[in-house]
Amino acid sequence: MSQAEDIVAAAGVSKSDKGPSQASVLVKIARERFELFMSEDGRPYAVAKNGPNLALPLRGKAGLRSQLARIFTDDNTGNVPSQSALADAMTVLEGIAASADPRVPHLRVARHEGGIVVDLGTSDGRCVVIGPHGWDRVPRSPVLFRRSGAMKPLPDPVRDGDGLARLRGLLNTSEEGFRLLVGWLVAAFLPDLPHPILTFRGEQGTGKSKAAQMIIGIIDPSGAPKRTAPRDLKSWGVQAFNSWGLCLDNVSVIADWLSDALCRAVTGDGMIDRALYSDDDVVVLEFRRVLAMTTIDAGALAGDLAERLLTIELSLIPDSKRREEAELDAAFADAHAAILASLFDVLAAVLKALPDVTLTERPRMADFARVLAAVDHVKDWRTLESYRTSARNAVADVLDGEPFAQAVVDLVDKAPPEGLTLTAQELLDRVDTPDKLPKKWPKDSTRAAGQLKRLAPALRTIGIDLDDSKRQPDGNRSRLYRLTAAESRRITAPGAPAAPGTSSDQHERPGATGDASTRTAPGSTRTAPAPGAPGAAPGAENRPAPASGTPSDQPKHPSPGAPGAPGAEMQPLSDVATPRLDVIERLIGTCAGCGQDMTILTPGQTHHPMCESDPA
Image 1 (cartoon, one colour):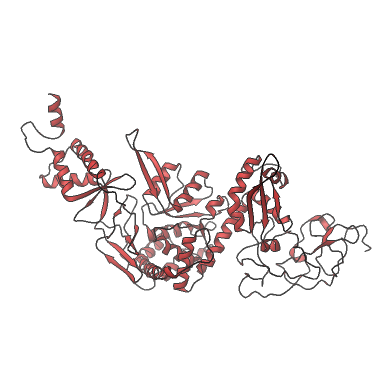
Image 2 (cartoon, rainbow, N blue to C red; image 1 turned 90 degrees about the vertical axis):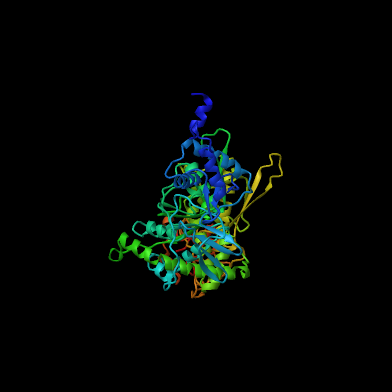
C-alpha cells in the first residue's frame, strides 16, 4: 500500500469512497454547532450556539472532542470516528479558535452588569443572578462559564425559613464567629476582590474538618472538599485552577513556597507550565481563589500569610452533644437550598449598600473589610470590628511563634519612648540570643535585615513601627533601622519603662488605648489595655489605682525579677497590692539606699527590701 493510501485509510475513508473524510465531517459539525475561541490564557474552547453558555475545552474529559465523537456516531447510524480523524479535526479547530477574539470563561461566579452570576453547575447551564434588588434563577447564564471535574452542582436556592439560623445550628462557634463567617460567605460570591483565608482553629474534637467541609460545600461543592497540602507548586496550581473554593485540612506547618502560593492565590496568581507533548509551547494557569484551612495552632505560619487569615475559633463539643457524621450530612443537605437563599438575600442587600460604604481606615484586606462594613450596615452587626481583632490576634500568634521576632519585640518594649535606631548587625548583637539558635534565627546582618523587612507589617499590627529609610553618614553607608513602639504599646507592654513625665502619684495612665480583644502574657507580643481605658471591653469601669501616697521625690521599689528584688523572679499578680488583679501599675524611681532604679509596688516603699542600706 502506498503512502497516500495509508493516509486515506488512516482518515477512515476507503479507496472507493469519494466523499469527505471523517475529519472533514467532524470539523463541519463543530463549525455549524459551536463557536470556537481562545481564552486570554491561551486555551482553546468551544461553546454551543444553541445550548448552555458553557466553555468546553477542545480536548480532555467532557470536552469538544468527546462531544463531536458522540454527535458523529448518532448521525452515522452508530459508526464511530477513528482516533486519527478526531486528532486531525482538533488540530484544525484549534487553528480556527486561535483566529477568533479571546474570551474569558469564568469559574462558578462572575460579575455581570452590576450584579453577580452564580453557576449552579447543572448540565443544562442554570444559574442564579443576584443584583441590588434581589436574586432570580435563570435558565441560561448571561456570562460564559467553564466547568472542571472537581465541581459538583449547587442546589436551586429556595426560601424555606431562615437559612442562616439553620446554618448556625450546624456550626460549633460563638455568635461573633458565626457572624464573621456569614460575612466571609457573602464575600465569597464576589469574584473580583481578595478574600482572607478562612481558618477554623480549635483542639481535637471541635469539628473543624466538618465545619470546613460544609462551608466550602455551600459555595463550591466538590468531590474533594478537604484536601491535604500539595507536595509541589505544579499540583497546587492544578488544584487551584479547577476549583473556586478549596480547603486544606489539618494544617500544622506550611512550607515557605506554599505559604507564598497561598498569599498569591488570595490576591490573584498565574503559573506557566510546559504544554503536554511539547518542548516550546506553554500553558498558563490564572486564578484568584476562595481558600479555607483547618488547624490546631496557626502559630507556625508565616507573617504575610497570617495577615490574610480570618480565624474562627471552635470550642470543644461535649460527648453528650456530639452528632454522627451521617446526621450532619443529612441536615446540611436538607438546609443547603435555604442557606443559599438567605445568603443571596444578604448579598443583594450588600450590593445595594456597597456604593455608599466608605472606610476611614483600611486594613490590609481593605476590599473585604468594605464588604463587612456593608454587611454590618445591612444586618446591624459588628463584623468589621471582629475582623480587625481577629487579624491582630493572628499576627500576634505568628510573632509569638518566631523567636527572633519575640526578641525584637522584647528589645523595643524595653527601649525608651524615642525607640531605637541601629543597624541590622547592632540589632543582632543587642537582642537576647538563645544558647541554641532556632532554625530561622538570622545568622548574619544580611539575613537579619531581610527578616526585619518581612516582619515589618506584622510588627506594625501590634504597635511597633519600623523605618528603614535612612543610612549611616559614614563611609560604609549601612542602613539604619528605627524601631519605635506606639504610645498605647508603651503603656501596656510588660516591663516597659514609664513615659517621661510620669510622677509617683500618677497611678492611672492618661490616654491609654488598646483593643479589648488582645491579651497580655509574659513573653507575648499581645498587649491589652487596662479595663476602662479607651478601647477596652464595653462596660468596663474606668477606676484609677489607689494613690501610693509617695511624694514625687521619694525613692521607689524595684520591679519583680530585678537585681535586689526578693527571690529575683516574677512576682505573681495575686501578690501585688492593688484592687485590680489584671493590671500592674509601675512607677520607675531611685532607691534611697543604693541609688539603683526601682519600681513602687505598694504604697510607702522607699528602699529595696534586700538593700543593705534599708534601715528595716
